[in-house]
Image (cartoon, rainbow, N blue to C red; front, side):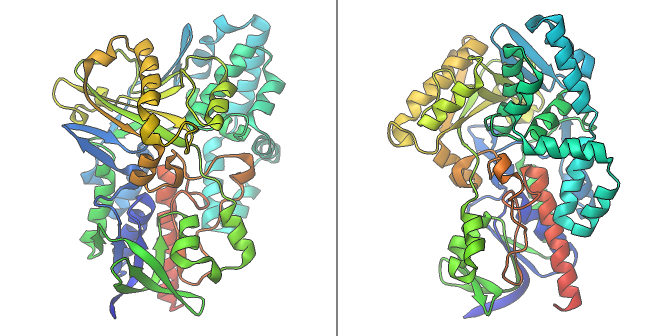
Length: 503
């Protein structure tokens, strides 16, 4: 028996679903959000463990403050600026800091190469950072919002710069770098800068994404990096409050088993307990593959669409070690990357063989350097993650995680000598743990791998079933927390317009 009907039922309490719910409820739409876990947030969630706080994923950018203001909940979130250097990348024998102005950034490489090689790097850097990457990011967002806005934006672009952007999009970073950089150490450093930030091998990353990172490292981004005080969960809780302030409903521990589809139209959902809930529109924030295959069923879609969805590949999984330590770590930045072996390809070869390298590159957050509320008084939180195979060659992850954890701590001892003796709290998360807590297939930092092959294949948020939508990182424009929030807002606008038109 069906209960009350909602204008919109949202499946999943990640940033995309929460943002959609906040805008829908603000517009007066009767909104219900269902989250299968005890807590909302997804990758924008926070673990609370023995007085320490560890964020599940990255951090919402400061630019999302405008959305919070629009929703009337900005006072619930405090953005804390990260002082420069925001990033430190530790290589054998030298360290690279960022962001810095181009000339200051370049000076850090003078000891690696000859004057001629240094000039080569200067020329390539000058060429690419002249591109207004923020303009092209906005253009990509327009493509998700409106094809008319996208083509109008194209008309305003410099055709020569547009051609350069298209070329960078269609070749991988390794190809592009090899054409321009002859010094091998310099080539490896830039490859690591790209691969470590995208958590994906630079040989498969579009050169355009490497340019995006270099632009940020050279101070081109207009936005200073910030953290959410008290952890990312406070951002998600603000969105939840925005829903509830406008009489929307958020329910946790509610697992959706099926989306009801009748005559090619989404009509509601069936919960695991058999309860049916009717909805004029259904929004899924659990991933488009899971939505199509499991919540709807492939029998409701054309074969070509199903093949497209099934061909989407998740990004590499993550192995994560969360530490609470009793002494301030000797780190220069809140965000740190440690590289031991100056050969990026060897890192990814080990992962593809099904294990971590003996000294894996590490991505290290120390948010308590900026925000003391992330750890008990006098203590600090450090959490480390590194790409890892979803399936380990030596058996189940629970059987091998201590061995792989020890590899991580060997590298941490090189970076912070004596850290093992300072540990007050420790929690190790395998890729399957990350998958369970983040709600993201494979448990990676991105939902889909950022490869050239997939870069232009991200599906639309409108599914080929009437009144059914997907938001978040698995649809066009949804990568990262900002992208997920943007898809939620755009989806809400689509639904509001359709309901008001009576469609």
